[in-house]
Image (cartoon, rainbow, N blue to C red; front, side):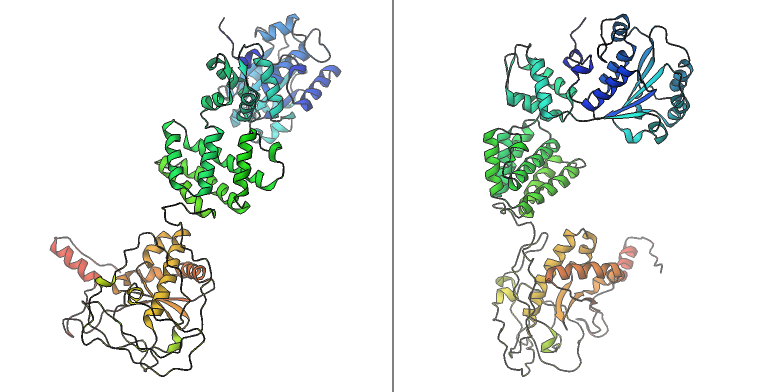
Length: 612
């Protein structure tokens, strides 16, 4: 006969050999002593906690010819027959592969016959939750009123999938996860006769990886003993399990705390080249930051973080450099990253981007050589009183356009904002330099200057030409106000409005309104009468219906309020084609987009029809 696996060879044969599960052992042993045997039992719990083993011990104990203090003797004829599987009165079946109605009906037909050699006919149904609905219904009546000599033992890892009508007819015993210390003690006992020197840290690592399942721990020990003929270390266990060691995990956490994107990418490359699974590593990294959280919140983390002293000391140093909110932010981000990795077409790239983004999002130092994750515009934008200092402004228009008559607006109509820090934004075109601005024509108009009140205590400093040039001039439109009024510094107001609008566009992307962002990103903002007015060219007229929906306005207002730090009103306006275009009064300045589409269709011989 071939060699048995260690978990089968070391399977407990009496109640005394069972590791933990004292609440189940005491109850079942007492029922054997007193002879109060129930007709149906349900053993539930996670894998590897002893459900099937306990059912086998119990089936021998209630049929043993010479029980020893509730334990089966394992020496009588009945016990030996059950152990070698030759006794037909004890039937063990797997419901995962025998879950049909016919199987259960056959059991119901056979259960009425008395046992041949044993006192009880025992049916052990493993993975009972896999039975079909029809099978449960077929078992229901027999389970409620079985013969006096029949005992049903149902074992399952998912008791919530067992119908309530079945649960109410069973004595239920919940099996708990086995503590780490108990698993280590059992592993030491098993490995004592192997001739392999096993370090204490190796036992603890195996027990931690087993996650409370004794069978998993013994199986892993069996694999480690087979691959390490002389000495078994913690690193050997991690290597076989496909998990990185504590030093590598500490290097990754330290690189993230330092904001060193280059080190993070190099470590990920080592991880991938070694054949590790990035999803498993992301889960392990979350465990690393969980341990950092424990070190940050407790004075003595050694009882909650089971690591060697050197690794624990390094973790305490990292915890001292981080705020608790930063650690929680990293844990939240890693949890979302694990979900994304399961569906990512390129897990490595998704993992690298996710780790780099976690550094600035958690409030950690920004990665050297990388762009900040979002504009630093969290502070509210203060709106000072209107500037009343008289000033004449020259508005330079593009060469392709003629200057329209000056637009007069009241000085109090446009609030001047405090300067907002400029931050680069994704997908924005490069701003023109001073050399790219064409010289103004000789007949360039100058806006009229109106007398103003006394200067305020916060005058607006004159801005250099390079800063004024960063905001493109608005397209020529019809006069907003018919009556002449005091002129204002349009360039300064539009520059501040552009910065607020840039932050607003970023907020829309961050909140998942990518479609709305594409609709409004080409708008030209300005402040007017205390509200942010966003103007769109005539080409954007087709978006008018979408932009004026209640949901759209609500989302844009929320993004603007987040950029300003207070509520603000937002309005959209659309430029109309000028009646007197460059070609004269009878020629429009720009053809309608529908006319363009009609002409293109006619040129290519495509039928064109407009439906309202």
